[in-house]
Length: 321
Image (tube, rainbow, N blue to C red):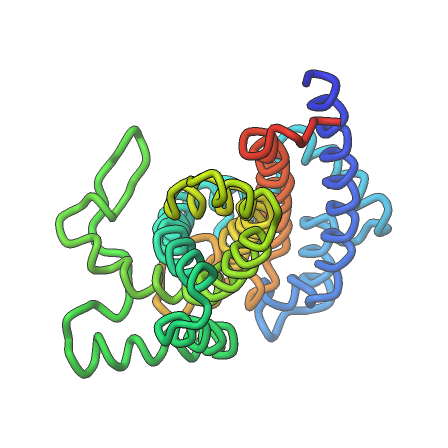
């Protein structure tokens, strides 16, 4: 176990190093931040002074070396727009994003797995066909369109849910959360459902295919012949084996939801990391963009590591090698 953890940790560091190079190079092609910081009538001397102040006058490899040294010390630089540490701004917005993702992930699990199990256990029933048709619709429709339609239906027509914002927050274990604040659940429903819809549709189809495949296996036929009840066959045998690919995809989807909530947060004006990223891109604020992408990469590699550990808990036949 310790040997495996050390090996995976080394792989994670290598991945993050490669990501840091790619992120640093890509952010140099999104525009010159000096153009956003100096006035339109700035002289060449003022423009050059701004470039020197930001360190943009140095060769690219020197800029990367300075960047990597700072990152190893936890310093991603100061935001060009806000004048504050970039990672501090990311951490400040992180609770809002994680809260939204946690609710969306809970919705995915509570809805997708039961529906997928039912559709896989009874594939010829009308309800199963309706579930699969709905899953195709959920995958096909873009999330920004679904978000706008939900705002139009629930906020404009019925006026039962707020269209944007996060509402009031209260401290929970030192973290500001809105879901436990009075009326806070009303603000999170629409963005969480929008974020969960596509992932729910994918998980339904994956769970159904896993159940269908496992119900045809010989061990299921043998257990049925021994008189094992239908529910025990379905949930104790078939579902347990079908969960391995489901957990893999769910782990990746969870990382995607954390890293790419930009569309949902922008539509619903949810003050999370995604909205901060969009604002930073519009203003060519490189430190925030780099800090966000590095934080997202860290979340991805950690989640993949956790998924690998969960494999052995679900299926003892899988060994950590």
